Length: 517
Image (tube, rainbow, N blue to C red):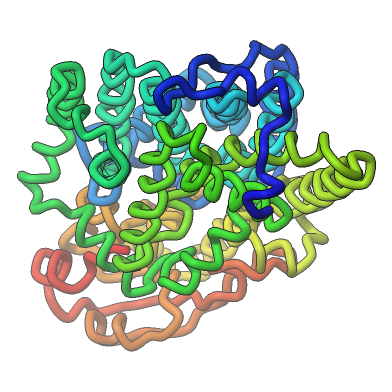
């Protein structure tokens, strides 16, 4: 959609007519977004118990048993939520994922509220809510307990406050930005990236007076105060989140790499929504009546540029894409009300149907787990990581039972990643499995095997090379059988039995076993 078709509908245009270059009023309040938000949360709750735990959720539950002000790859917020949910309803997926389902609904409301700030009428606000409700980042983030889910809420809350501030010129809204970003720093360091983007946007597009405004300075102080516990922990541990980010930039994680980051921009909301958020970006950059909001467009350009250059994960900037989508919803509503209105609205309806269908199938557990098509896991890696963990534990238990009795009693499990260790912690006790250890991220800090643990069942190591550097005997004892034809990181993987520790665990744990990514 180019500028000629990017005009607002007449009613919205009257509300957003600038006075001295500043919009004078938001659009009318609509009730439609509340219905869309409630439906979103209800659907997420109804589907929250399907399939099983995600590898990250299993890790969060373990982190929740070792509460701290920080971890190698995150802050304390999500592990604390995981512990709270598991305390209230032990083992319940629905309880674990309820906060995320609620966040999904709130995200829908925030996107609609941002569209209203851009002058959206009632219909355009509901349209913006629908686009958010079917967005990949909202559905995927709302289905699983994840640090990404918290980031979504934090970034959208901050973005709403910024858009309101720029419309009203009331800099007290900066306090909302400081509060949101400060709390967000207890989750990840990513809110600092948004802060950089917003400061760059204001520096580039103005109003630069905000950079010395007293309320903005107070907001910065609030941000630093709330972020202090997490920053202090990171500083005293040599900022491990940065080393994890470096590993991600090297491609040692899902959704990482510059090409993936670029491609993800076109699918993380929905491929069918790309013309809408692009129209929103163009309108924010070029429309004279929207000049006040130009820093928001520049903020996304800067943040995405940093993600691309640094090799970060392509969904880091997704909340800002939802802000562009909110602007694009206003543009699209105006476009659909002119000219061949029936044909244009029909085109939007077709896009809405395709978006809904593809998002439901690819992002939510609506298909049977034992007949999940390969294209679903290919498009949504996380779907495969929620299937088969009990059977994974069964595979380890079969190897453990086959050990001689004396070896079985002193054996431990060494997992290649935190998800595998979390699965043993969750499903292992009922199967008689020993404790699992792992050097992956903060799992390495939760303890290493006992000094006399010289019989090890190792899983998550595709090749035996590393294991042979630690043990005198490494034997293939079985393979993971998750009893479904799902192409995930565990299914079909080798299970090794290792004997004869070459050097004490204390010598190799931090230097060789510990790894990040």
